[in-house]
Length: 205
Image (cartoon, rainbow, N blue to C red; front, top):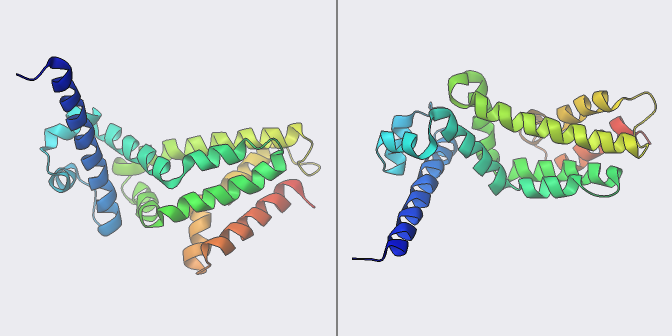
C-alpha cells in the first residue's frame, strides 16, 4: 500500500488535473463554438467528466464561470497590467497600463469576444463572471486616476471620478474590439491610438 503522503499528493494532482480540464473545456467551447450556449452537459462532455464533478470541483455553476474568468485573465497577462499601473510616474503608468490592457485583450481575443457577447445574450451563463472582471478593472482604473490627481497630472477641471469613467471606457474590451475588429486595425496601432486617447483625454497636452 502506498504511503499516505504519496496518496494525498496523487489525489491533489488528480483534483488539479480535473479542474484544469474543466476550465479548458469552457475555453475551448468559447473558442471553437462561440455561438453555442455553454451548458454544463457540453462542458462535462468536453472535459470527460461526469456533470456532478463540475459541482464538486467548483461548488456551483457561478463558481465555474468565475474560475474561468480568473484563469483567462491570468493567462492573458493581468499581472502585466497590475505592474504597469504601479509605475512611480502615474502618467507613464497610464500609458503602460493602456498598452498592457490591449495586449491582454489581444492575447485571447478569440475567447474574450464570445465571452462578452454571451454575457449580454445569455446573462445566466457568463454575466456574473464578466461583471466581476469589469468591477476589478473599474477599481484599478479609479486607483490609477487617484494617483494621477495626487501628482497633479489630470487636466484642469477633470475630477478623479470623471477621469475614472473615461479611462474605464477607453480600456473596455468593446472599445478595443471596435478598433481591432471593426476597423481592422493591427494590435500595435490600436494600442497606440487608445494610449494617446487616454493620455490626451485625462492629462491634456
